[in-house]
Amino acid sequence: MTQNEYNLKGIVFDKDGTLFDYAQVWAEVLSEAVTTAFAEMGKNKGKHKRAQQAMLRLMGIDDGGNTLAKGLVFTHKKRIIFKRYLLYCIRYRIPVIKTFRVYHQNIKNSEMLVSERLKELDFTMQQQLFTKLKENGYRIGIITNDTESSSQVFLSLMGLDHMVDFLSTRDSKYHKKPHPQAFEAFCSRFSLCASEVAMVGDTETDMKMAKKAKAGYTVAVLSGSNDRKLLRRFADVVYKDVSYLSDDARLFPST
Image 1 (cartoon, rainbow, N blue to C red):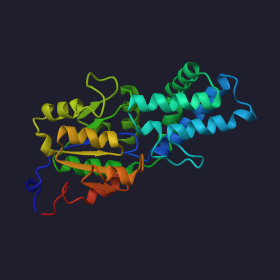
Image 2 (cartoon, rainbow, N blue to C red):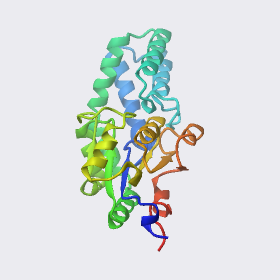
Image 3 (tube, rainbow, N blue to C red):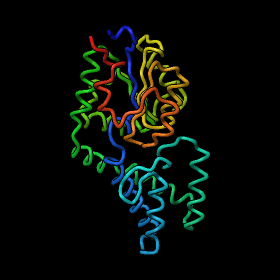
Image 4 (tube, rainbow, N blue to C red):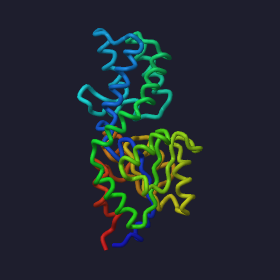
């Protein structure tokens, strides 16, 4: 069996929840952002504790620091996000606009905390995977809804930046996922057909982008939304995390 039988020449990854376990990096950051936001609004007394915990669960992190598949960070459907956030604010009697603004400002200010968290983690597995992909001639792309500056920090601290051929972020000119425009731009830049490109992601949004783009191979990982039942509907294969890609016969056919 040779690589030409599957004809895969490119691979596109989501970032958060795909290249690394979402909760490992973001649980502490989101918790800090929620706590700080409530403190700045003067709502950090004991009676507001339940509201803080509920907001963290709404975002997608449970009380034990694990991901929740229905968290807002794992969906990009604006109508659903707005509805669930509005209902939360009404239930816990907190100001809708002010809470949203303060929370997001604290997320933007969390780059230092994210950097420190990343420095504590071992990304040898991801580095070995990317090295193997490059050695087998793959073009590697990252399509994320994170900002460009944050994405660059992540990739640099993970030791992957020099192996990434294409990066699409929130700041790029392309439409956001699940629109396939960024995927199509990756294919166009390296003269690849969509059928020659694999997509790896952790959310329904990633899988829908792959489907719309007609990707040649779709891989879902459970290190983000952890919604196996949903992801199985869209993906060709579902893995626990990206470490399993190194032994994937479609990506690396035995000779």
